[in-house]
Length: 483
Image (cartoon, rainbow, N blue to C red):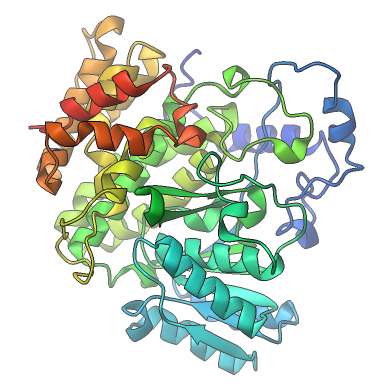
């Protein structure tokens, strides 16, 4: 796949591509109608479905661009009460975690709801790095309250928990594993509209306000997994820089690294047309489709912003411009990977965090073992870059240059090593833990980690190079120490 050139895309090219995709179908999944934004569901009568249904499988030939509406502005959180009133909401359920429950973002949301006379109930027990048990607790609360709209105030953990509560409050008889990604779950498709969900992110990292994914620890399997369906995307994401100013340094670091890896993985994922056969029904086209011309634009822009803003954001808590740039970069990368997908860095991270038994990270909750998601993703990034660099080397070299490497005399066959070195320097300067051994893992744990990672089909299949147990084991071995 030819390099698209990081930073050389224009707003006009984005607009043209959006019109190209949107004009091909009039069903709600592709419609620009405001009333259809939160549905994102192909109907059986959809023309795309008729055209795509064929007797024999054909290679994938199409990609979709789906994202939430976002509203960006300092202080814009104060409008949320009017948004819910405009939706005629009468029973709003607000999700947050115990820490954010004490801070200004939730206070601002509640005050706005009260000013607009919107009845609401606040659920404050979201777990940071959620588990199947914490998801189920939120689902049970939502089913009991029976909301007609949902608000999430917090980081990716809170937004993902709210997505799950939304889904299962509509599918009241569904079991948690019904919609969880196969093979760990049953991979059921969402075939009916969900409730309006408004996401108010308080971190600059996950991009969950723009995506249809909800990630959690499946404790019985010792692995992270999730639910991925376009229908889960929030109706609206409110990106307010005021809401991220309370982030501790380590939260800024971890969430920012997640943005970095979202951008890298989406930009280097297998092209959508190489992913496999086209689905028999557009409803079955995965949210993570592989790299494509639209995702590339957003991921490339996010990467440039992160490379500049993240070091400033981490080292200088008073640099408001850097914090604001990171909130935008998180959303840009969310749009990119929310349609293009992620691959090996995230795939490996699910095992690393899922099998963590003792590690506690500074400035995060200390009541349960926790390896922050962005940290667990980033520690394998150098080894992954070395592995994938032989595919699309131009893109790997572009990324390395953005991260500060001199690629003037770099050879295509060295692209993976060049990017790996650039990543090591970048991570070390930020103070990222030195490989997975920092979490207590050793070579004796590799087999168990591989076993936990292999079921992550949804993301592993997007690797530009095919992977199996041997390749994953090699990546983990090389990630024991990075510096």
